Image (cartoon, rainbow, N blue to C red):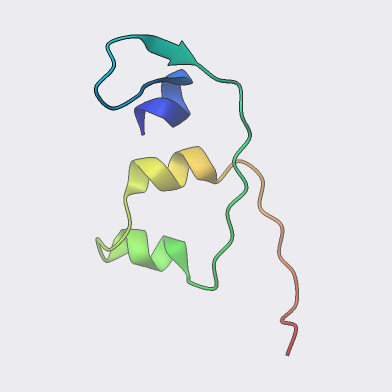
Length: 60
């Protein structure tokens, strides 16, 4: 979560803080708004990932 918010990270066992400029693309078949309401998905993570929503029809 810190990485998504501050764009900084530390490798395991290393004290040096590194910076990164990345974009995250995530996909799911689940209804995350429902999962947040039921406590099965973190609301703060949903807030950070839900910047641009693209809905596509099912491939089946």
